[in-house]
Length: 286
Image (cartoon, rainbow, N blue to C red; front, side, top):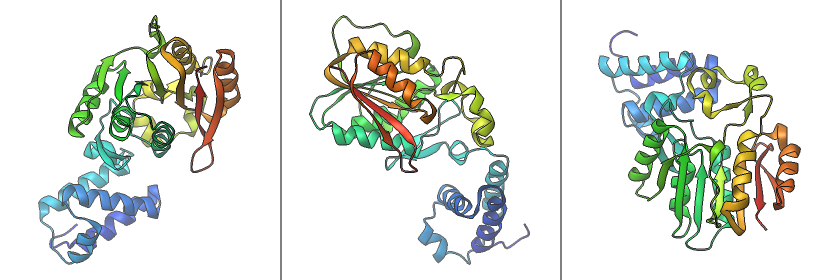
């Protein structure tokens, strides 16, 4: 773009360029996020300052972000943060970007568990969005979280510190957890890898090219491997009446239900997300 570019001009140009890939609504959302991060402007500020002439430096930063978005790089990775449950969480290429359906999982746990001093385990914590949020919304909980990735754990620890909550993070393999001799937890929650390899062709490029595959995909031959390991661990680690919560793949609902039933869990139920997909499974340890 030439000299004397106004805020309104660059908003219009960037929104038009991004709409070709992302659609008009998402493009407008991205423009808002860009201006929040590059200029510190709210949507109201953008309207009030629409005739402001931008410096070459700011124009260059906006164009750089736009070009990265046009190459499918997620905006959350560009700026290193994502919104989750009303808070800002640091994210990096070592962590998944938190999704709306995961917020629904946290909301369900918050709604159904109003006792104090509950002990919670988040398996495969990633950015720590589930563990940190539960530490904020539950009543005086004791929250623990594991992940196999040290890089992810470092991000999760930063998120806990920035949001001023205590979570005990430690390195651990969800597929090889040692069962305790006596029950420990009131709640075990996990959003493990659950997308089968055969589903890759249906995934968007910004997910395939940038998000960590180890946190997304499982083998077609054993798509329930994480759920089986965590469910089996829960048979010993959950207290009587303790609750197991999973974010799930809708393709494997019946297999999941049968597996948990065979393990002895009761009150197995499926909750649909806002778009209507079977996305959460909950069960109770007798």
